[in-house]
Image (cartoon, rainbow, N blue to C red; front, side, top):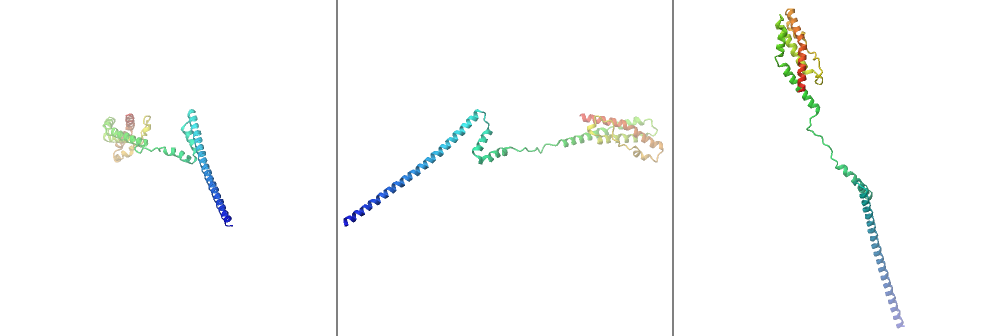
Length: 229
């Protein structure tokens, strides 16, 4: 019986060792299968990347032969990488420079106003500061018995007409202007003679009125000459 028991124990030990060997072999096969699947997955992923790259390169080559533009490349990139589409569109817009106004350039209105002011100032200098008024009034009043009153009225009418034309004539209408502004008040200018004989005041008012047409024609011609430069 003792011999038999030892055989049973030996058989059980051999059986357990066989199961352990089979278990080890099974797990080794399972590990090999897992590694094979992982390797196969890597190969498939690499193949997909290669196919996509070939398709992309083929499309680029075909487009290059067909006269593809950079905009087409941007469209393809947006299709392949839609997450970057908004950035790809926004970058050209951000690169566009905004025009900056020139602060140093004077406006045409300011330039025109300055030119008009200069023209009027030159008109007053040439029109008023001259001996024309005195010489013309002397000729007009040479035979008038009320010579002093005539000269005073004539000088007032001539200078008042000249100054009014220089200050108020429309610069844009100088070339065709035929009349001067009505700014001469001969009655008021000759009011100093109201206590004098009527002939004296009449001589003053008459000379003031008679000089206006000649003075107006003269100053309008001066304005035309100044405007033409």
